[in-house]
Image 1 (tube, chains in turn red, green):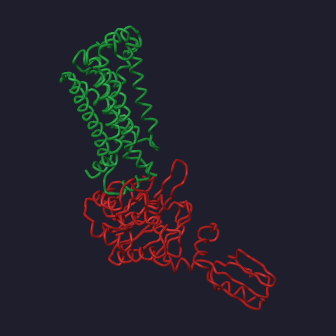
Image 2 (cartoon, one colour):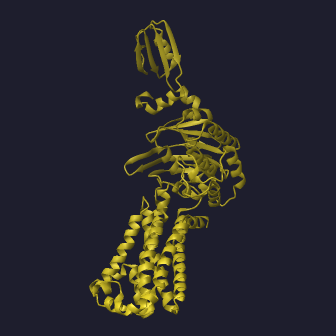
Image 3 (tube, chains in turn blue, cyan):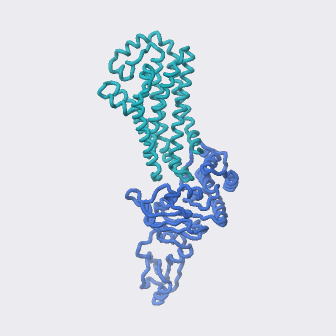
Amino acid sequence: MNVIETDSLTKYYGKSRGIIDLNIEVGQGEFLGFVGPNGAGKSTAIRTLLGLISPTSGSASVLGLDIGKSRTEILSRVGYLPSETAFYNGMRVSEVLELSARLRGIDCTKEAAVLCERLQLDKTKKIRQLSLGNRKKVGIVCALQHLPELYILDEPTSGLDPLMQQEFYNILKERNSQGATVFLSSHILSEVARYCGRAVIIREGRIIAADTLSVLSAKGFRRVTLKGANVLPLIDGISEVRREDSEVTFAYRGEAGKLIRALSDLEFDDITITEPSLDEIFMDYYTAEEGHR
Amino acid sequence: MTLFIHELKQSKWSLIIWTVAIAYMLGIAIVIYPQMAPQMNEMGDMFANMGGFTAAFGMDQINFGEFWGYFAIECGNVLGLGGALFAALTGVSALSKEQKDNTAEFLLTHPISRRRIVALKLAAVLTQTAVLTVAVMLAACLATAVIGESIKLKELLLLFVAYLLMQVQIACISFGISAFSRGRGIGAGLGMALMLYFVNILSNLTDRLEALKYLTPFAYADGAYIVSNSVLQFEYIAAGAVFALFGITAAFIRYTTKDIT
C-alpha cells in the first residue's frame, strides 16, 4: 500500500495555479524529498493532503484513506510541520505541547521531554520570547511527539542552526528506520541529497521528475570543456556555450557515446567532462525548457 | 472539550475587562441613584416632553422617579450597548482570529473535525456572553442592595434574560460573519451591532417603521417595556432566533468547506 497516493490532484485558487495533475506515490517507509523553487506548489500539495484546502479536481489518499472523507483519521496518524509555525499568544512552550497532545487525546509528556532535551528546547519559556529557530523546534516537537506513522514536513529546517538540523535529521532517520514514512519539502538540495532516498521535483505546479537521487543526477547534463579548440561537436543537446581564448565550454544532455563519437572528429588539446554539482542539476530541472527532455 | 477550555483561556482577559467595565459602570449608575432621585421627577418631566427623542430611547414608557424605571434605562445604556459590542467582538473574531494569527494551520492539522471546531468555538462564545450577563446581574443586585432599594425579582430576571438573548443573537450573527472573514472582522462585527442599535432607535421614532423591530434584538431587549409590562416580547425574540440560527448555519456551512490558506 502506498502511504501517499495522488491521482491527477489539481488545485486552482480562482484562476491562479496551485498544482496541476499531480501524481505522487510514496511507499511505506520511504524518506522522500519534495523539491521545487518557491511558488512551485509544494505547500499547496501538502495542504491539500492534510485537508486544509480542498482540491479543484482529482483525488488523493493518505495512509490508504481518502483525504476528503477521512480527514480526522488521517490527521491523527500524521505529524505535520508547517513551513511557518505560529502559535497562540501568551502561551508557554509546555502549554503548546500539552494543547497539541490533548487535541490528539493522548499523553505525550515522555516523548515531548525526550525531544525537547535532544533539540535543546526550554519548555518553560513563553512562545513570544523564542527566536525563529526555537519556535521551529516547538513545531517539530508538536509534529513528532505523538509518534505518527507518517511525517509531512514543510521546509523543516529553515531557521535551525546546522547542529540542530543534524539532530533533527538524526531523529527523523531513527523514526524512519522504525518504519515511519517521511515526506519533506525543501529547497535546500544538499540536505535532500543527503537524507532522502528519492526526490520528487515540482515546477510550476507540475511534477517534472521523480526518481532516486542517483538516477536524477545521472539524467542531468555534463559540462564539457575543450582546450585548444573553438569548434563544437555537431550533435544535438548542446547548450550554454561559452568561448574563452582557446577554450570552449558547453553543457551536454544526451547519450555519452554520441558525444564521444562526435568529439573524435574534432581537434583539441585537452578535455574535461564533469558532473555538475547537485545545485546545478536541480537548477537545470527548474529552468529546463520542454525541448530538453 | 480541550478546545472549549482553550478558547475560554485565550479570551479570559477580554471577558474580565469587559465584565468589570460594564459591571462598574452600571454599579456606579445605581449607586448614585439616591442623589439623583430628588431631581428625577423634574428630569422625568423634561425627558417625557422631548417628543421623538423620548420615544427613541423608550423613555415615554417609564417613570423616572421610580428606581426600577431608572434601572431599566441605565441597563439599556450600559449593558445593552456594552454587552452588544462585547458579543459582536467575541463572535466575530472566534473563527477568524485563527487565520489572522496564522494559528488555523496548527489547529486544523490536529485530529478534530471542522464541525466540532465550529461547535466548540460557538459554545465558548455563548458561555462568555452568559458569564458576562450573570456577573453584571450580580453586581447590579449588589449595588441595588447597597442603596437599600428592594429587588423586583421577576423584572430583574426578565430584563437580564432579554439582554442575554440579545447578546446571543448578536454573537451568533457575528459568528456567521467570522466564518467568511479573512481579517479579524472587528469592523464588520461592531458595525453590525451599532447598526442594529440605530435601527431600534429609528423604529421607536415612528409607528410607520414598527416593522423594523423584527430586525433588531434591541427591540426585545427594551428595559423600559419589560419593567413597565413585566413580559418579554416573544414575537421579536422569535424573529431574532431566526437570525441567530441563520448565522450559526452559515458558519457551519462556510467553515467546513473553507480553504485555509
